[in-house]
Length: 624
Ligand code: AMP
Image (cartoon, rainbow, N blue to C red; front, side, top):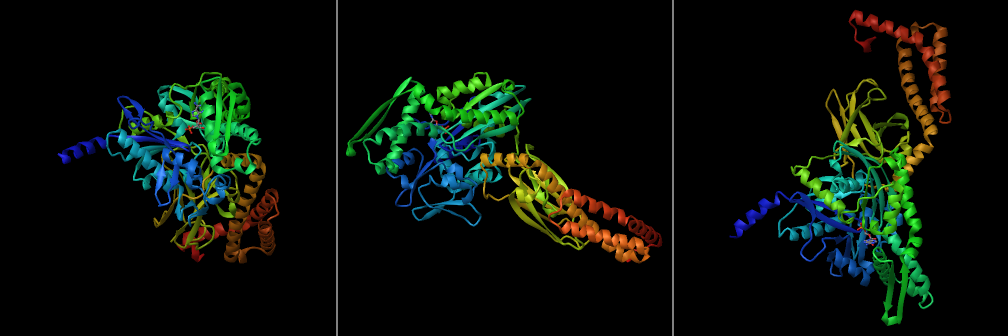
């Protein structure tokens, strides 16, 4: 009897794949059922798993709603917003680290670790616990069916490391990731916008602690991210804080300053502020209460929506500023946006809706629950990937260019920024010095022309290159970004087939602010970068020419007349001196390079003559 039941359940399990929105504040699972996506919640529950963790004295970790409640009693052992730390190193999270109640350290691979009750946890491990909780809730809602296949959403600006960290979290949780999907793409799928023949969509996502806006295009059901913008530290929490500040000012009259800064008290204030804010989304006025019977504090204050709107106007303006920048990056005026989608709990604030509508000149989609829309879209994608019928092709883009450092410190960009993924590109490289049997590859990310100004993603070595003259070996370097945004770089020496590769390790991540800073600095430094790049390339070229000239002189030099030989030697010395002078600009280097080329023309002619004769007499070139 037991067996039969188990078999039936297992069969059912193979058809169910979950869509999971792994959020900064809350996480949620959804699935496809009867022709549409639905959120999975156990009976009597909402299905939301607050992305909070509480670490008990006995070593147990509590995840979700209970952990969020325990934060009130024991904030020192409760963690929130783990998503901000995914795929990042200590120095990337300095500002976020301040709100963490425990010490942080770093693993050998440069991954942040939280030290709680004598144990260390990476963000991947903690996110795995949240994913397991979402999975368990979903399984309960499905009547005990085991689910392992999932689609997980991430912000569009997540870089390779952050996506890899998300995949690692899923692996630790025992989940099989069908795909990592961008949150705005998922939200558009939930609204069925893929059914449009073509159009442009703005997805405005204001959650608890983060704001993102993405501009997408749809062509024949194919989504492309045209641009993203946002602020990783702007969200509903800031709206709450405006009320908390008012409360603190007024309570200062009746409470000691130290009591006002008490962590547990502040948490209480925050919750009271959030309750008041939520009421103001439906009512024109609401009360914020704080009651501390043991200290005799009873505080109650009426806020009108009008007052709340004035307190938060600057926050909304910041989001609109990001929207304008995203539009500018996508080279679209607001009138060309066909659909606007609202995501995130904070888009329930009436002033947010009104001002977004005004900016884009159209009513935004808010028919679906803004807290569920990303999970619902992930479920649509999971359904499609499991062979479901809705035909959608998802395409996302790389936010920054990816390339290899070349000789002289320049960057050969192999995959350009905004390339649609999955994608791949191969470029040929060769050796710089004779007999070179290995090459160090340095993979970098960014728009600047010199590797030193880009972000280093990793290094690897290709060994076993046959000892040949410089420039002879042919090495193909292939960059491949899979549908989840994972980057694999492979270098292969073509005659021997020797190869080496690197998969970019989950190391330090990048915030959207940093991506923007990188783009801005590339724009600001474009002229200087262009010159520096030209100078670097010229130094490399002069080096190659100088070695060829020296070789030529030793082979055919005696046949040159004295005058010509002196010209070559002088031009060679001047060019080498110029290449070694780091102060020289591209113009001066170009002059020396051209002079060397001119001076060596008779030598080149002589060498060609030797080569031709050698070929005719059947000698090998190296015998000439
Ligand atoms: P999310 O990260 O998308 O789950 O959004 C959570 C944020 O939405 C929190 O800051 C909540 O306080 C906020 N929120 C949820 N419901 C409402 C509401 N009805 N009005 C205003 N803010 C809300």
